[in-house]
Amino acid sequence: MSVSITNSGVSESPGDLFDAPEGSALIHACNSQGSWGAGIAKVFKLKLDQYPAAYRYYRSHCQTYRYGVTNHTILNLQAEDESTIKVRLPLGTALVIPPQQSDCKGGRKAHWIICLFTSRDYGKRVDSPDMIINSTHAALQDLKSQVNSLQNDIQGSQKPPPGELWSCRFNSGLFGVPWGKTRSLLDNVGLDLRVVYPADDTKEIDERKVS
Ligand SMILES: Nc1ncnc2c1ncn2[C@@H]1O[C@H](COP(=O)(O)OP(=O)(O)OC[C@H]2O[C@H](OP(=O)(O)O)[C@H](O)[C@@H]2O)[C@@H](O)[C@H]1O
Image 1 (cartoon, helix red, strand yellow):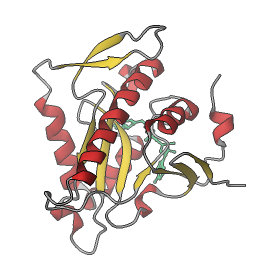
Image 2 (tube, rainbow, N blue to C red):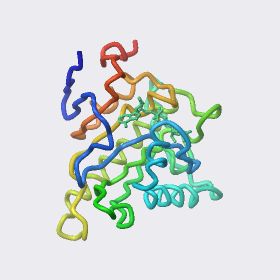
Image 3 (cartoon, rainbow, N blue to C red):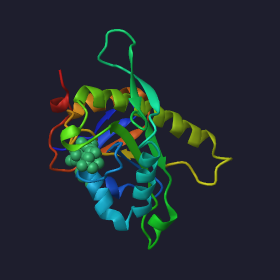
Image 4 (cartoon, rainbow, N blue to C red):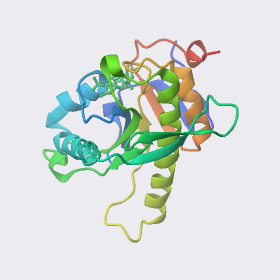
């Protein structure tokens, strides 16, 4: 039985991320290497007829950090004290890609694409679950600050801010992080967000909560 689970501004229900309404933002987890090679990212890329410009935008963003080492300080949530960790940008940040004109042709929906940089690498070299949680926490704080600026700057900007924020159960697939860990961060970041998951992903949130 599918249950819509709501906690603060986060709701969960079966659905397809790409069914998000016109003008909404699609959130997914990304690596810093500029690869949308598998998982839901691959669906984004395979929907290349839908988001080619957004992919190029993400990839060029990663390439600006490829050679220079630009440090970014994030909280180490596993430490007792408020200790921090130095990581390389764009890890621990969010890239908010406005709808790209060339992606919206032929009646295709205009979607914002939000890339949360939660692991530096992917595949066998993916970061540890603890490290992914630290980067996710930092990236969500960054996203909240950017969404607030976009919403406060309506007069100044050309584009309306993102409508609804839709997300998949990011980090829980190829990045191998139990969904409950990421969901706990979403519950505490203070963003209104709709999480959708494939109908066959029948694990309820409580089953995914980790001790
Ligand atoms: N249409 C849809 N609507 C809603 N939910 C959907 C869906 N299709 C699948 N899902 C679910 O969305 C969750 C995340 O699934 P993923 O494994 O993709 O993402 P992740 O966040 O764990 O890992 C990120 C790395 O995976 C990629 O691949 P590469 O690294 O490029 O090789 C990236 O690039 C990153 O690096 C899983 O629960 C899927 O069931």
